[in-house]
Length: 198
Image (cartoon, rainbow, N blue to C red; front, side, top):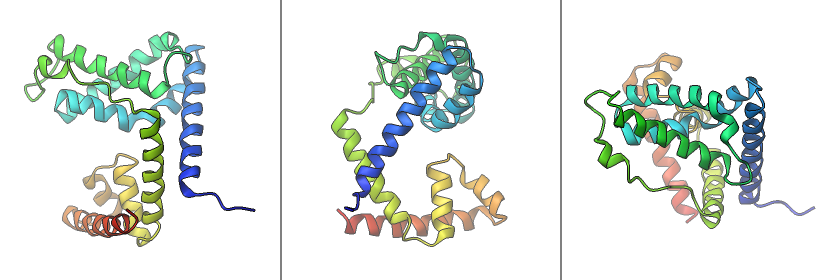
C-alpha cells in the first residue's frame, strides 16, 4: 500500500475541520447550544487575532471576542453554508463586531481609529494558498516531531492553542524568562529544520 504524503494528510485534516465547523454552525442555527462550544474551540484563536489586529488592545480584543460569540448565538441562523465557508463568515462576523466597537466608542485609548480598521482587506485565502498552507503545516508538524517533546509541546501550546508564555511558565512552574528561552531555542531548531526542507 502506497504511503500518503504528509501534505495529503494535512489537506484531509483541513477538509474534515472545515466540514465539522460547517456542521456545528448548522446545528447552532437549529438551536443546539452544545455546537457553540465546538465552534468556540475551533475558532477562538483566529477570531481573537482578527479582533486584536483591529482594536490594538488585548483586553478590548477579549471583550470583542466575547461579543462575537454572544452575537453568534443570537444570529447563527444568518449563516448560509452554500454561500461561504464557515471560517470566512465567522472572520467577517468578528471583524464587523470589532469595527462596531470602534464606531460606538466602546473602547479604551489603545485602540486604533475606526478609519484605520474599516479598510482592512478580506484575508480569506484562495484555494491554491490553502494547499500551500497545508503543505507548510505538514512540514511544520514534521519538524516539530524532531524537537524534544518538552519544547514541541510548549511551542504547540503557544502557537496552536493560544497560550501566553506567562500561562505556560505557570503551568510548567518555571520563571517566565526560562519559558521564553525554551521556546526561543525550540523555534531556532524548528527554523533550521524548515529551511532544510525548503
